[in-house]
Length: 329
Picture 1: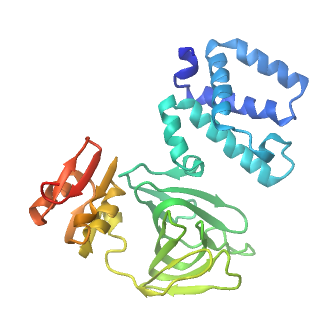
Picture 2: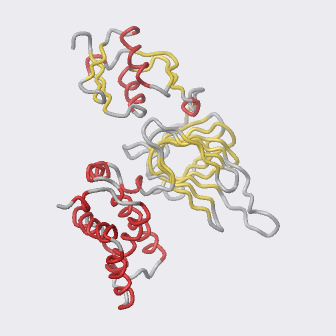
Picture 3: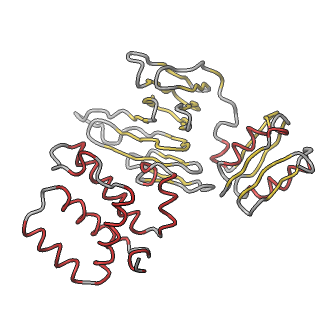
């Protein structure tokens, strides 16, 4: 296989190749389109290399599921095709080693409008003035239109400080602020709140100010309103018991992890969200308890401090593969 087919591709050329690929596979391309495509390929060896790479990636991952290979007759299909083009372009710009990471990570996270890497935190300001802080390994889409302000939480955790709808004035209709997770929809009622998407088919919301209405996707008619200081987990079928939100709820937004008598296994699981590798806790020490305030900016010193506070060793199998074990384990 040639170096041109295995090396990375410039972002602009990758997008062009992806657009050509899906147009030609859609059945909508005209004779003039085929002529322009041929001219594009011949105009620069880099274009030809990008095209060959697009064909290679499509064979490996099957980039034409269902409706994406059909004429774009509806809005949903057009949206899906744009997402698929973006995905293919991302894969074209990555070295082959990165393809394995793409397979391990849901495509929707790679295609998200905004995302953070492991250990990264970032703040966004949306067009209406709403502020969103993204925690580590978080992915969101933002979709504002004439009827609603929608944020889709694909993965991770966000802190939202909503602003009044700047568009709503005079005869304009007020647009509700909605957060959508894999389990349901949250409607902000003038509020500040934290939402987390877990990997085990559940989400969690904690309200710091105002109120939030929770509507699970599969529980028709069910709506639970959480007030300031309340929190609850929810699945697609139900909302769990409501409890008091602790003062540590938004500590992560300040780069802090605060614990009080937390099981070591749970502590390591939280710390692992910020660790750029594999971080695990041996079952033999899982029930030890941890209390304290820990800085998330650099998790290395946190691990270094554990043997000073608990009867454990921190075993580095590699630089990025770490296990907390019993002494001598």
